[in-house]
Image (cartoon, rainbow, N blue to C red):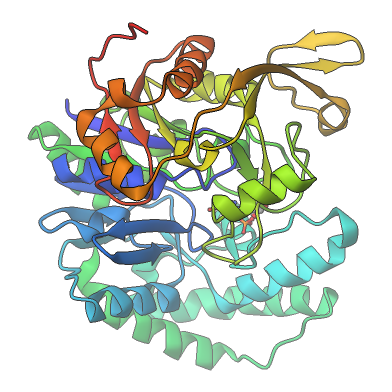
Length: 436
Ligand code: IMP
């Protein structure tokens, strides 16, 4: 059963888009199963950079079917804009399929996202403002509008007539009244339904048929384990299930259908938004990583907080997701640094803590326990090509020590090392023996 999942092990932005794009070469279907336009995947192909928010990364590979599963929240306006953007750059989207069960981000979700954040004051989550939380809340409260409803005007009318007065009331409570009208919303969203209709289907049937017929199916996670609604740093999380378990509900496939789970680990740690970050570097080193790693949000442009690699987090992700191999990304960003650190455990009030705690107040008091490593020399662009073509053994010994430590500490072998944003800047280590 050739299914593969790609999951972020940290707070998102691990470089999943590039890894998905690399593995999509062997895929027939690439499936997104959660999140929405809060995601931001940056993929470099040749000299071109593509920034995707909602379209699965597989859309950039000819012949790949790119599926937006039922667990995704779809902003139709943004999706149509993204389709226009990729088409204007010569990419065809005929392989796009959207689940008729996916929930729709409505204008009031975006307004309420901003208003709720504002009302939280200094305790705000730092959301992307894309309406994600309010849309998932409505889904769970059964006030959701689904993609299928956009193509059925009578149902859409019935739903909006019922839901909108409630939302209007909420917007007024939050001090964010709107000029929008029921009629406007119905007309605009049914026109989105007409534009997207040709892509809409029961994607669960499509995916399960593909699996049964031996097709290669790749599940593309957005965000990361630490932003998961259950297993992340709650409440500083997104509102979806970003972990491998979310694939079953978000794509409509059984647990037994997920074979390989690739955990994407950035060689250091970043996060956007608020919340505890035990290995955060607040001084010059943090700024250095931010600049060198171009750590600015694809979706919001916000500067990402940066810190040392934290293996307490990665082990948490390995356990929850059943990760079977690691893809280490952005290790090139660390080149040229004299000394590096990796957190292996935390110390909280004199106790050594190995498992990621659920309590935010404990996390705030946690001190990282570091292992130190020698750095390795920086290299030129020409050397990168040579190193990549000669493979893992050509990597500096210090880098290999750093990589080997990650793998042995978390108990999972490394399948991919990414040395830059481009497809070509990738070393595959499948079946390699860790000899050095
Ligand atoms: P929301 O998903 O917009 O509700 O934001 C909730 C939290 O998740 C905020 O801290 C965001 O910055 C964070 N977040 C959402 N999507 C991403 C992502 O793709 N990368 C990194 N952080 C994200």
